[in-house]
Image 1: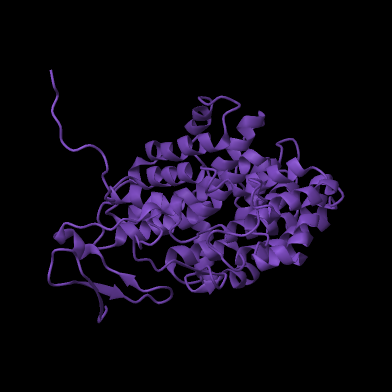
Image 2: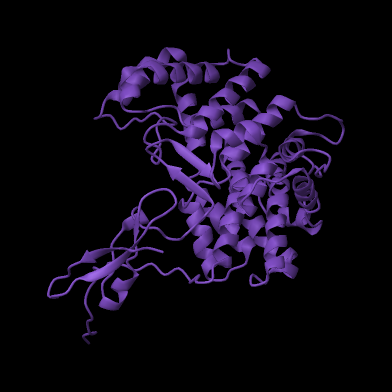
Length: 426
């Protein structure tokens, strides 16, 4: 696998330790530090920012280039030339489907879109004002009690059907979370609709009316699903893998990922962006907001600009920007204060030398928050939709991990700085 090695010289030791260096298909070389355990030494890497926790063939990010690849395909290529079902098949299987494979894949998804009828009464255990993400964590985790016929993770067929169940049912459950909190009747899925169209149908239609979602809005939702489907080994994906390494069932693992995604430092960025736009309130207040953002001594920060991973530009934002403007044009709502503020901030960020120099371009969260708001989706549902989209990536990552021959339970080490052993003095 590799002919290169790194040498580490430890104190009080004459000979050096040789550590294998692995060369990836893309990205940085990786030093295998596992031999250090035999020497009684660990590495220290808070947040695992310099540690490869696994080997994966699914997603690759180059933050410096602004590149995101699913199985080798760029995100902009997929967003332009594929739909979410193509992308879901790709993430799960490694290749894009042909016409027959896609038809069979969609048929299998549609076969599992319904949820058990007892789950409708399960929802009644939650308060009406419960956060939708709290409901999502509980309901997705509870799926294992409804579908315990496929929990043998050593059986490839069980893993396969569990994956399909998760991907197929999570839009149904997400829509149920929204409708439960609003007191609306649950809407059953319609298998003659696309994945994104069906979700919007379950979210907003009423039994007393017959209608189909607007095509442009459906396309926008499909793009959001594609752009958020996977993002390498982030916090929630790593949580899914870590939970799965113990042998936990897939429903529990995905519930763990949803819980992690709920954290404001991870999945709440587009909600934080919208809160910022509401706080600014008017185009007249933008100059003061920009002034404060440029003042390094002021704790105020513009949300939705720049990205921790992408040091140049967020490739997902390029796609989402076009979709955002299409939605605003279709719904003709640009004259509302929230959207006026958003569009003026976008203009400034793309033209102001300060933003250009520091590469503070609008990211995917900036645009997705605007689109979701335009679609009529409340802020507390933003992270739910993020989880819905990411579920396919989580399932793909979980299945890859479980199938590894050398897979081991995750067991991070620590740098202990507590007291030494001591005695109780009576």
